[in-house]
Length: 593
Image 1 (tube, rainbow, N blue to C red):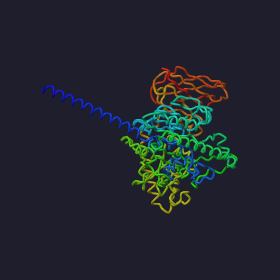
Image 2 (tube, rainbow, N blue to C red; image 1 turned 30 degrees about the horizontal axis):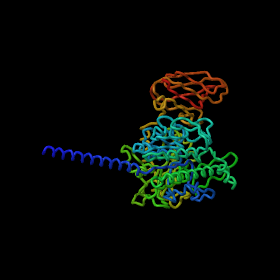
Image 3 (spheres, rainbow, N blue to C red; image 1 turned 135 degrees about the vertical axis):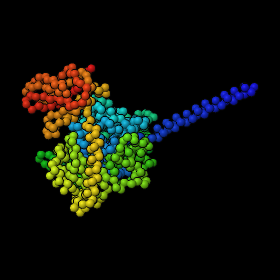
Image 4 (tube, rainbow, N blue to C red; image 1 turned 60 degrees about the vertical axis):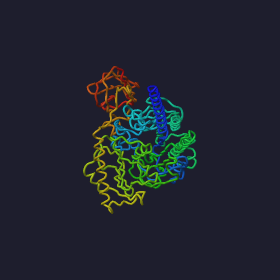
């Protein structure tokens, strides 16, 4: 009996242990699910070339933007938030939390917009931490492997190529209406207006049933040139007598605002608005265009100086609104300086995710500032520089901004800062640096450089230290190469948008592509421009040099069964109908074996 009693007691103990373990597992699993569900959804809405003055609340006498402004009324507006003065650099900074020069990004075309694939993006970090990730709209950090959105953490991607629809990245003849877009790396034609298409896709993505929270990056290509918009959007502005370009631009912003309203409405319908942090911002200031016959009054710029590509305030100060119900108090305005490098560390803070230890972040979390907690932003600086070409150099077209002061080295034509200036020119540049008290002179009209040389020297030293550090990291990685024949992309479309070479920097007549190849057999096709007479098509890579005759009626020519070696180098494709060669429109490279 003693044995039986002991056995019964042992069985009871074992049963109790099983029940306890089951309950513990149930509680643990349930709590794990709750933790996943409690993590906030993340929504970033980014516009393209919408300036600080392109909002009704910033004094624009023509525009009404109630839905955009609603985000601030239900949350917070950062009135002094800063971007880079061009598209790609800002996008790299948002997605990495790092100065774009570190990532390889300095400009918007050729190799200058290629973000190094070693960068770990916000999408990659969130994806690794249980988030669904989707991008809808403009990527502009490389169209081919290994630089595509799907290579950098986005599980769902609907984007256009290059810097804008209709640009040389292709496809040829694409417009904002019924465009051909890239859905998860497959080209597909869509019906409708591009901004509406991207918004529809983002709404569908957010509406999917899932236990995982989402990161939605809705990066519209509006109001970027070309100015294409439904007439019903532009007509109200035409009727009040605005210049056609401004009427179309404001019509595009009106379309953005309507789609922001749709997004906010959907979050409410889904019952997730309280658990979704919403951020709205722009990538840089407004672009104004001069025509041959007239110079029309530019966009409303809220008395800020400069335009897109400028390192003055109008080029870099952008709208910024954030809403996170129950965490950020309503109707706040904060004038502390924030910047695009702060977005990633802030989102990670919101989501309670530690940044990977190997990443050097340049930004800092804005969340304590938004919550009114103790934070130190007093002596920070934000540094911008912009030029084109693969070689970076000091002192040309940069700005160092603190909360109170701003050091500026402006340039009238930053698109053509292509080579290191001579010493005499650099001496003149450094002798004419500008200093502004941007707290009291936001329009940057009163140059204080001669009054405060000690401040000039301090900010210049900060710039020099910054330049040395970020360019050393950039140089150690080199320029990111396009992969040819890789398993993640066996068929690659090369465009003039991604050219490199000296004739690209001068007249964009001819270039080559920096590539990394897998050994194999390829078919290579050229899409040909109009030819004046017959000639020869050339394909060159390392020791391979092939030629085929072309006639002036031809639109396409194909080199079949081309054997390419493994390695890195410059891939050349060109036409000679006279002594000076020129490039094809597109080159398709497909590995067949």
